[in-house]
Image (tube, rainbow, N blue to C red):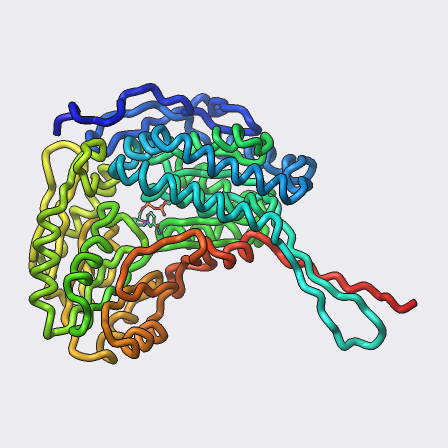
Length: 493
Ligand code: NAP
Ligand code: MG
């Protein structure tokens, strides 16, 4: 893969590789660092300070001071809103640099990072900034004897730990940081070890936006050390985690010491259902994008494809044709549509599922590595696997979809719900009754009808069943970053 047509210089020095604690970029206390790699080449990008438990302690103490004594939670709501809005503006102004870091570290196409993901993160800060001035309670006419003025008020929780995965490092950090800040909390962010760079830069932008020191701390490091300490820390009031269901259980265990609040946005194995009366061309295009976008490394990916028998051959052939046309490559190549998997470890994991899939079903297209360097895998479609096979049951988190046939609505709803997960789903039909029937009966946190993968700052997102607890985005998320206090005043004169 030539690098001659790069629109940017991927080798430019990285500015922020230390931990952000109390408004300063600092080394880890024990001086440790780790390498972060470019998944398109396997080459080391830079060394990053490796935060351990002691660094988490420092960061939590800084966040605690900023919450208990600092200006942030006491600031006038419109001033807090203005700072969060400014952060959105700064992200837009910084799109090329922070987008470059996202592509380098994570692998996603640079054009998508700069043109799509950074603006989406900025939009999130802009949208959420408005809640700072709208955290309202209610007045409640109670029926107790006497005369009372009773009202509720929404209050911040305190110090919030944000544990972020590597698939959308900047955006998932934004999903959590923006509402946490709007409510007046202070935070410690632990980005994934594979993708710390854009989050460290986001920390710098928070300072430039005028968010006071100590309000946003960023500690890069490993999950088993830094992440674990953050989840169990007695001075942390809430932890919001996105990642695997297995790690989600560990977070829950760790959080129980002080019964901190927990938001979990976990895995998925989302059913995408195509009925015979659908706009087949649109369904093929949307379903192809709905699984292969971000190389399938998306919790919401439409990884179980259910197609009505009458159109099954046409849809599967159409998706295979589109899959073969997808340009897989280095994210800095201008025509790249999907990049590499994030790491060698993850590449090995997904490759393992390709082997399993060959035993459980047939390969319609793909199924192999692309190139010799970097962690690229072909967009892959399996068919003919049993509903209890591993490739139908388990989250692969790569560019791999499993196609199955169905004959009627009851049958497909039963198949769609036969999973421990419940994150997303898709339905393609021209029949309004079918659309609403499936939408109401499917066990999932969100349903896309005649589209797939639409995200917006105003749309709540999250799962049911083992896909997690709580919601990101929309009004809903503010409930997850605040508590309600009830005040009852005796006004009997
Ligand atoms: P993971 O373990 O769930 O990692 C997510 C985040 O949690 C990372 O920041 C990770 O840190 C941290 N972490 C790991 N162990 C922890 C612990 N004991 N306490 C606190 N934090 C901890 O995910 P993964 O191992 O990278 O990926 C495995 C699978 O998870 C994927 O194949 C996919 O199925 C799923 N996944 C889902 C999502 C999603 O959006 N729902 C995102 C990513 C992965 P380090 O990575 O730095 O160790
Ligand atoms: Mg990396």
